[in-house]
Length: 411
Image 1 (tube, one colour):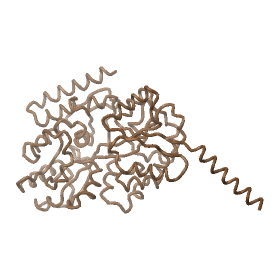
Image 2 (tube, helix red, strand yellow):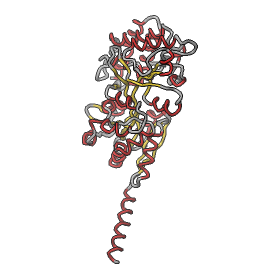
Image 3 (cartoon, rainbow, N blue to C red):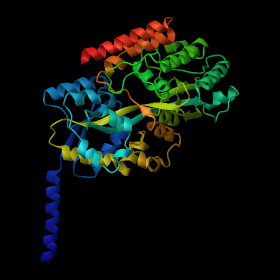
Image 4 (cartoon, helix red, strand yellow):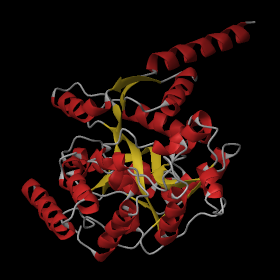
């Protein structure tokens, strides 16, 4: 009897100690992050022990609010940060160095390489992949059939895409062969257009982000392809003024082909079951494939006293259980080594998004917003002028010079 009493007392004490030592991790995420992360937080908190207190911050305010909170000593323990902003915060010394811990993970080499690259500054790792997004190519199978095209054959070159676009446009009325948001949406076009260049071995910036390399034969070929699509009338006129609001025009069933984000696969499956579509990788100007790697990295605020607990939460996210929860609610797996297991039973087209991770790229720069995302920045201005304007050479010269000026003035 005494032995049972002592054993029971020991269990109660252990539970009390465990509860007393449990920590609450504060974490900020951008609005619109979706259900995948919310669900994985819910599952983690239900396990008992440490918990995560998640706060949604408006997307447009998150970066500035985080910088202000850091300056005021009020920053959260962790943050879901668009990977393009990782280098700037790391360079400012505001993030925890996760290098040793990250490299000790047995699956480290299976994590999305572009996310790890953008999370690395000066040889140290400050961010690890949380949500992975890639760009893919989609085609409407019903419109392919109506145009006399093979609905199950993914076009492998832009010559094929252009020929297909013309045949689909010939169906008439408000049916078009191709779509893109070209009216000042720099983020849209870096996401869907630049793979044409990357796959061919060129880039708009040097590896270290210190030199603008926009004017290349590959970029001129890419511009010519899009100019040709516009000139042939295969793209709706509204594309020229679309700032991204109509990025998902493919969902209206009147667009034959479009480069999209892999997230659109889930959107089409769940919200537009009437559209029969195929997906593949985006061909470059020479036929090789590429993709943009987007999404968020998990970063930790420098000096948080809860670093061990934060690592425990990230461990859970990377576990098969955590990865399956996130995939179920629309997020691509961040671990390539268990991707097939995680996606088992889900729409098989999601695997194209995973295939894209291996060839995906993201520009590395501390000035991503000024160079690329800003609607008045050199990239967005260049896209509009080069594809829709009359002076292509001038568009290249102006954008190249402005990009380099921004880079030089920031150093």
